[in-house]
Length: 61
Image 1 (tube, rainbow, N blue to C red):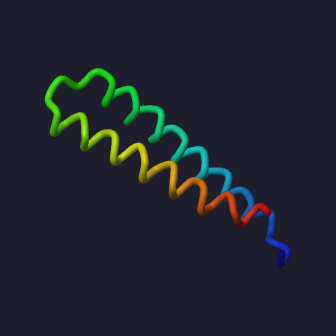
Image 2 (cartoon, rainbow, N blue to C red; image 1 turned 30 degrees about the vertical axis):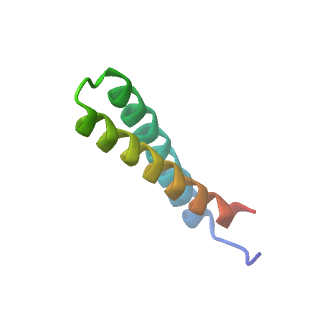
């Protein structure tokens, strides 16, 4: 892995934290939704946030 700067590391931490928060909120919204279409929208959004988080985590390996 190429060395990353401290600023890049802070930015990654910030983005990863944001995606974690988004995943948690979308999962909570999906669990409360009664409309199947809305529920599916939130579930897909939660999944997308988790995938984005995992892609960013690869920069830290």
